[in-house]
Each structure stands twice: as C-alpha cells, then as structure tokens.
Amino acid sequence: MRIITGKARGLQLTVPKNYDVRPTADRVKESVFNIIGSKIINATVLDLFAGTGNLGLESWSRGAKSITFIDESKESLRLVKSNIAKCRAENDCTVLKGSAPQVAERMAQQGQRFDFAFCDPPYNKGWVQQIIAVLGKNPFLENGGYLVVERSAHDELPPLPEGCELVRTQHYGETIIDFILWNNLEK
Image (cartoon, rainbow, N blue to C red; front, side, top):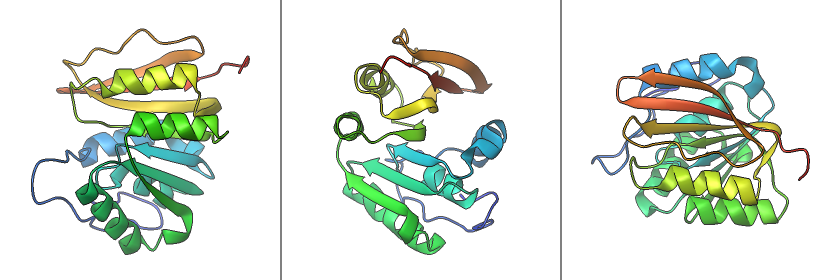
C-alpha cells in the first residue's frame, strides 16, 4: 500500500500483519481521488475508521490542510501514527481514539465541521448506517461537504436523512463507493 500522488508520492505505508484491518485497494483509492479531484486541496478531512490512515494521508499528500483520524483499535492507532510520521505530516494531523460514530457526534456538537469524511468501516456490521444517522442528527460536514462511503456490495445503503444526497456510486467488484453530498442549509 502506497501514497499514489502528491507530496508523499510513492511512500510505502506500514500495513497490519493480520487481516483485522482491510485497507482500501490502491486502484479503488486512485479512482476515488480522481473523482474528488482538486476539491481536496485545502480541505479539512475526517478519516473515520482510520485503519492505517491510508485515505487521510492520501488526502494530505494531495493538498488537504488538516486530517483528523478516528479509530478505536490500539493497533490501528499505532499504524496511523507510524504512517503520519513516515509522511512527516504530524503538524497537520490529529489522531483520536474512540468509536467513530460517537466521536463524530461529539465533534459535531462542539461545532467541528469537515469538507470530506471518509467512512471505510469493517464491512456488514452496521457502521455505515450509524455514521449516516449521526450525520443526519449532528452534521459533522460543512454544507457542500462529502461523505465518501466504502461498503460491501452486500451492505445496503440506508435511506438518507434530509440534507443528504447520493450524487455518485461506483462499483469495483464486491466494493461499492458512494459519494454523499451534505447540503442542509437549515442547520
């Protein structure tokens, strides 16, 4: 697993020795960032279920100004911190331990908002549905921000709350990527 382009281009990231973490495949990651394009420049990014930090660090390498990583696994947090250090991105990154839905909700209640949130949880465990529910009640995205969801083809996207619009879905074999636009001007 590597950083595909940007200031850390080609850097090999540290990956887990077991399969507790399922990093996004390079070809899927490259496609996601080709779709996002220059919108990532100067963006604030939330990497929910950070795992290795792969998506957040790719964002940073492509010009995002700040990345917040959330994971509840000690091993994942160790990997994220190691990969941040490899990229020399410590000044632009924050690492938080906890359950992604709970931490995202707490951050939203504190008024923190992000331009992009990557939601790449363990497949088929209800995490996607929980994150979307939090977004509907306590928005952690700026208006015009995107929730980018990676899910299994067997994991259904729930009905989206008011303010969310599914703007694009891409299929990569058993993996589906959804781009959900948050644009609730009432909140």
